[in-house]
Length: 371
Image (cartoon, rainbow, N blue to C red; front, side, top):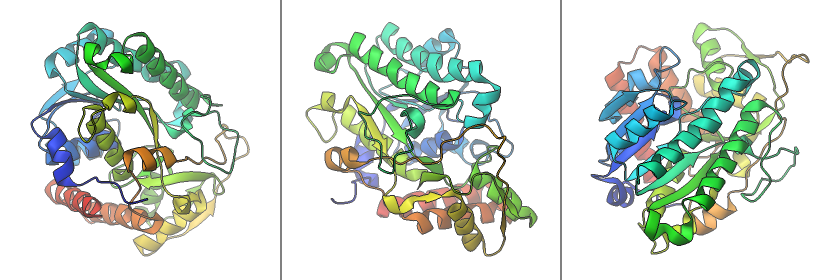
């Protein structure tokens, strides 16, 4: 299998001058995607709440990638309809979500409202407004019923989830499947015009994430203060990948749904995994140690708490489908991923300006596309 064709020239042909509606553009992944779409020459409308953290990647960098910045809650149906009317999208990337497992224990109903009904609102706004667009709904690797298997989950595995966050992502997948079968049948794509797919990514890392209860932001906060890193689940195994990896997959999938590189876009109206190679599927202890190496100093301590809410101990994704049918493969190995991540945070810790951080994002983006 060869590396995926996520090149600037190939993607620009699909996105340059095109109208894109991006939900969740003020979040970590959304801000990176907005910047990438800007590099491709797309006309981006963003719909999201205000950034949840300060600092935030959007405040520093992401605002440079959005032409039209709409603030609103995807739980409000009319807000989403209004955004679709204003954006008149040719592409939709739905990233807005409540994205934290531990928060879902404290806010279960809010998590369901955002991740399930929010997704339904986006899909129904496309239906009622008669939009004709390539649509990628981003869910999560945690959408699968996790049986702690050592092998990777394939796209046809059952949906499920122990915690409310994971269950909400599995439910969002079922919502998409229902809307696809009821209103956006792939066989009738020429009639309704909505090519609809879902994307399930691994645990993303990279510069600019300051979320609570995530290992990389926790590490960076400790390293910046010269304190030991407290690691809650040192033996938990996750599919780690730089944020640019799945975003490249989303963009490639969106291009195929729009008919670029294929004369059968309806064949791509399915669920897709975008994860790392097995080499990058490591435990949390190894992540902390990789960041310490890249940072140049630091230490970590075991802070396992037997009373903590349940979190899965082992999770892997199969990426065979994306590799064979999309030609997509990850480009950066484990050490490269965390090296780029540490470089970004070190620049921020050393007082780099928003302009310098934006330039660093673009440098990493072009290094990634150069492969």
